[in-house]
Image (tube, rainbow over the protein chains, first blue to last red):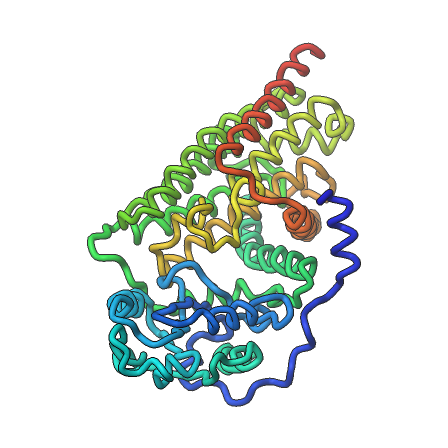
Length: 162
Length: 315
């Protein structure tokens, strides 16, 4: 695409982000120390990538989670919040524990989707070690299979407080 | 070196330290708007820094004191850079003059500290980032030196403050062929030095394409805050230098209160406008393949070399 076409496309498209919904209620108790800046590391420990797609949509231009001060980061060492999706499989148990250990305090861990919260249909599978709360303390949950981007946005707004 | 010059230099350093997070906020906001997003607001980098400074760092087992000291060295080198460059005032009565060799060496100290931080934890991506950073740096430093040298020929001094003053007195130097060639080379070198597109993508999450980010992967909390702040301050100071070389009007030539205030305001406006332009330009660019980056930097070196050659022919 030529530069002039790109400029015209930008001018024609304008703003894609939807208007921000009303503030999403009480701020999460453990989030006060973050003071309006939330860096998120996404950890998939055995999900079906449905939750991953919804999280990606929440950070996309339509829902624009970044406008509330929430950002996806490339390293657990930069993160304040870990979003964990899927049921914990045997092979991903150690990476999950290492990721939590590598995240500086104060940190929050969120279980996203029914599989991460209760296991869903995967409970008792031969490759399944358990659900997220069996191994690491879970601070907040986002139920749904998968949850809608708007619900993920609302949950993370309660942490960033914006 | 008297009390007034010290105060003026302090004003310049504090202004740029305060401006650096705002500059990055403005650049991210411009980018977000052009992408159709609402954006996190221009104060978000401030909030990020405030939060990071309050967190407990987690350092990898086996990492050394370099992981702790490196970020502070980077911040110090950026602060020295902000003090040396003629950003608010061109008054050259300093302990160390803002000579072009001094400025490039100060840049190098910060860059080496950053590369050592990347190597320290011994992870694959950190080392890869450091090696790429050094490759880019080895190509950028000669261009920076040669470009500023070309700018110094019409004035006969390698002190950057004197160069800016000469351009203020005789603006025809700015649009002369030598000036234009040298500025084009300098701008490419500054873009590469500060890790912006098309050399490095500052917002990438793909480890394989990272240069600057890859070196930060193992740093956390306040270590990370200082690394980010040091890089932002370097970007602000270098944009301020480019601004004062391109549009020298407004910069203070004395240490009286009013010219310094005007100079501070002008420097702030120039840096923010240049930052917004850079961010808008970045939206239209894709990152160059790593193996094409040396071609771009070699091109900028040729421009700087031509500038020197042309000025030799003219004089």
